[in-house]
Image 1 (cartoon, one colour):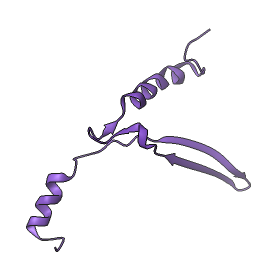
Image 2: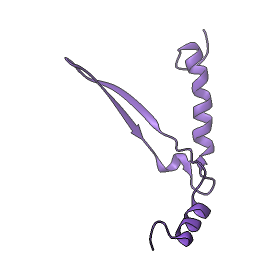
Image 3: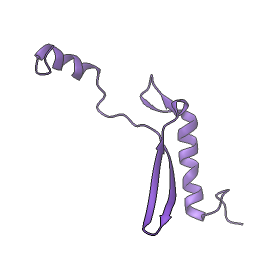
Length: 81
């Protein structure tokens, strides 16, 4: 099939999602200080993605939502002491 064949295009449009959210764990590390080099590592775990729903798993979403508490207080448990 050619990529401009109408049958091929119809098949791609019928199976491709409009968008797909993929959960990632992002690790930021300083690799070098001279010159300053920062590494961003994006890790995607299969258990964090629900293939049938094409969205993050419920467990990943819970962890994601809980991260906002930690951001708001800058404490590991997310609450002010």
